[in-house]
Image 1 (tube, rainbow, N blue to C red):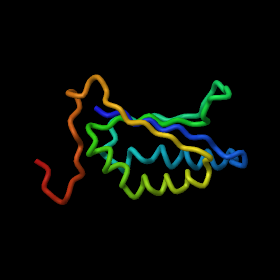
Image 2 (cartoon, rainbow, N blue to C red):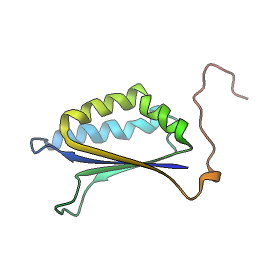
Image 3 (cartoon, one colour):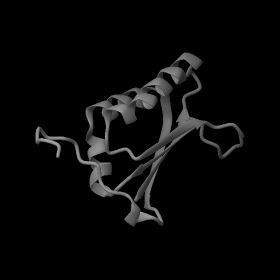
Amino acid sequence: MLNHIVLMKFKESVKESDIQIIENLLDDLPNKIIEIHQYEFGRNIIKSGRSYDFALVALFANPESLQRYLEHPDHLAVVQKLSTLCDNIITVDFPGSDAGSIKEKIPNQGLPVW
């Protein structure tokens, strides 16, 4: 199991409608990218000087499935949109404690499903 954490700091000029667009795009990614096992995101609710505005937590079977996610065209479209709205985006990827319980999801590459 591999945890993928993303923190975003929005530009001062970002509007509520921009954030809603990001939420809609992010909400649709698990429907398009099968490598995602678990996926949560949301706005920061407790503001402090160290806070970021938005976070995403995703769970993947292994580094290879995370890499496929990172290279997926639908993910790249969200990254492109975020790059116009954020002053800073940071990520961290780390192994989880229950790595043996998740099986890798591999995209169907035209092979029959048995």
